[in-house]
Length: 328
Ligand code: AQP
Image 1: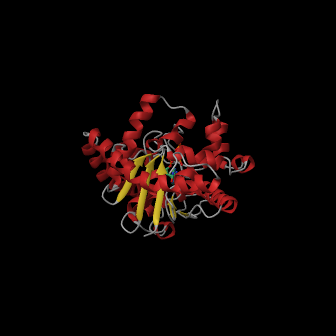
Image 2: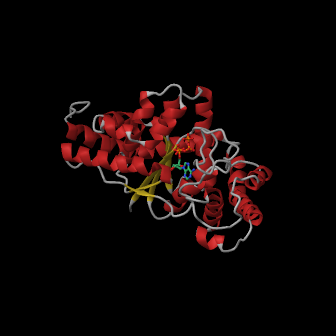
Image 3: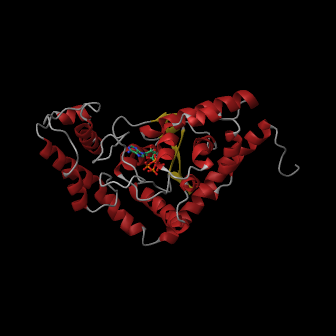
């Protein structure tokens, strides 16, 4: 069975972009793939979150994944920092990736432009992400479009390591959904919807239905009053069409054919999103009453993940010439 791996940062409330771009395909993959998913708390440290908030957000992120449909009997779900293998392999990969390659990452450019303090960890983030992926002999990485460049760099890193030290890592490929891969902010449709940008154009997965409806009603469109899917010249309208299409399993161009005015498009998109979010919200309320059960499931997931990660790390260490930790 092909293996799928992906991760999500516990950096605050999950939003519609995370759900449509990533989580929904994670849920679908677990039925026919060996699925390994991770709450990547070490990645969140790159922007120095408050320790209490990080702790709460980590359990909340896991609760959200289970609420969205990740089944602990089908998928392995764990917290990144529970396995020291991730940080250890990341160092070996930092020694494999070039400074110039990391400097070209658009996410680093965006985030460093917005930050007063830019940590070395934020710069090296793609090496840690490559470690996450490569430790699990991953075939497919389901992500949103913003992660395309990082997964491509992960392939380059794996190829260089394999060339330098012999066959060590499986070559992963990204799996980016046809619709929902880049959900844009409803107020600034030139920016992707994001957890860290404080914007009233971000729709939270746990947001109340009335608030979701209000946000869609106020979504920025344009003044030419023509419903057409064209992200370059009509970003706001195309974003609504993309969200409605992704929420209802259709294509944005087919959806566009149903509308001549913006008002009904906004109302139907809000309804489709509320329908999608309702069962997740309900399940979240149930599961969050028992955080002990969530941490127990995460610990079982970590034990399963460690079996694969430890073997890959050992192979990488041995191939790179690091001597065994204890004599055999
Ligand atoms: N707007 C988006 N549209 C589609 N997919 C998205 N993803 C994120 N934003 C969108 C996908 O969600 C997965 C998890 O993302 P992440 O939390 O690991 O980090 P991120 O990409 O940095 O997401 P955010 O919400 O924008 O967080 P911040 O604001 O902290 O940077 C990934 O597969 C991502 O592609």
